[in-house]
Image (cartoon, rainbow, N blue to C red; front, side, top):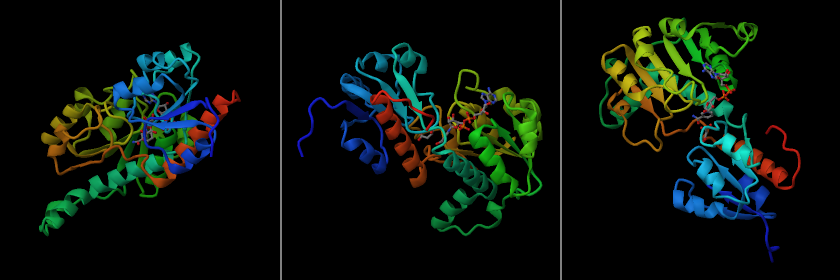
Length: 315
Ligand code: NAD
Ligand code: MLT
């Protein structure tokens, strides 16, 4: 097939579901690069009308400036903390994401981490495979009757809370931006952050990464927690201070943690990796077939609309 010349270049800077690539293949010059290779990214952006990223590629002011033809930055997922939205907007570049594509997957990942931390599943599995049959060492705790604190009661926080309700827990949340009536309808009691820290047996973080939320759970907050609390973060690295969390685990105040995201990614060394009571995953919250299909298709359709000069509805 002869391809028409001068088709707009759509740069795919991270892995995208095949179904999404099919949407783009016929109309655009689709080019693949590794968005974490900064010189390659900046060079490839020179020709790009659209760039599609996940969370590892930084589309900052420098990247926007390197892309004179750029019309749209598409984030195949939720968090926009790796895109400088004001810099793009100032240049007239549209920024789109797929805000509901992976929320079920992210909520399920938080539940999976919480259960694994409560029952020592990962550590016991690793020990058994290494030839150790140790039952009492891996005694866990039940969820039933415990208090679960949700920090950030947005889309994912709500899905997480709804799933936790099935375990017979008491639900509390900290989110100054949601209406008490909405929380009450969900069976969730709203608290201040310090109260939530003092009352919760499990805490799960579901915040965006913003200047306000970075370091929200640090040394001061970890000194307030109920002894024996277990903490889950499948939102963003940097919301919890990793060293402060490791120190709180070392001194026994925090009994365990489930961590999907790290301040610096990829992360292959962390003070948290020293503990059997920490379950760590490499940013897998959205890594399901379903979420990747939904995210990829949503942004591919949005890119098409944006490059055609059409209205782009919320994906
Ligand atoms: P959302 O916008 O629907 O919800 C975020 C909630 O946080 C909102 O209710 C908001 O009021 C609250 N909030 C904002 N600032 C706050 C603050 N300072 N204090 C307390 N509450 C605050 O977003 P969402 O869809 O629930 O996603 C949350 C985050 O999860 C995303 O921004 C993304 O970073 C992360 N995420 C991670 C994965 C993963 O792969 N691990 C997948 C999807 C999303
Ligand atoms: C998101 O914000 O959507 C997640 O971090 C998932 C991802 O980027 O893969």
